[in-house]
Image 1 (cartoon, rainbow, N blue to C red):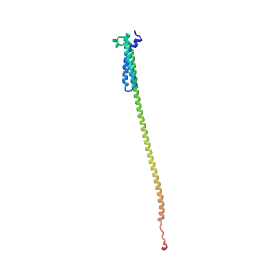
Image 2 (image 1 turned 180 degrees about the vertical axis):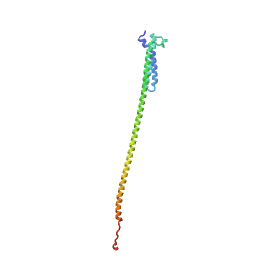
Image 3 (image 1 turned 60 degrees about the horizontal axis):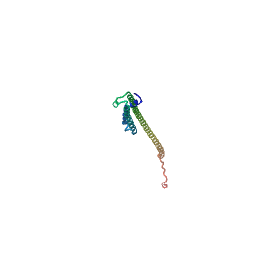
Image 4 (image 1 turned 180 degrees about the horizontal axis):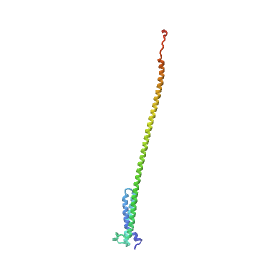
Length: 184
């Protein structure tokens, strides 16, 4: 007496389990995304309604009695196995997604640290270049000051030489001649 109707209606335990899984997914995403939570609630309602409908249609078509609703047949176990495998695949996908997200965040943090280190290194190189330019500027200013002092000293020596030549002329013995006092 196994036909497509029996096989379809025997999936009520799988649909009930699916409704529970949809409810769990709704509870997981309700605070993160309003759209996803509405979708999960709608899927939960549809799965629960289909489970109840299939259970009572199976009773109506006399595939099982109301007392036998919790005794699962082979067709029911097949649907449950499919739901359990799909659930395991879904959980593994979420774990893999979470793991890849953590790896991505780790890589982003590492890249940010490398960028910060490169920026700090560039800033330090800029400061060192500024220090060198400042030191070179001071050296150049010192050299210019020395050159100016040398020029001043040279001009002072020239002036002193001129003064000394004048002093030599002045230091020469003075010849006094007596002229007529009235002519002065």
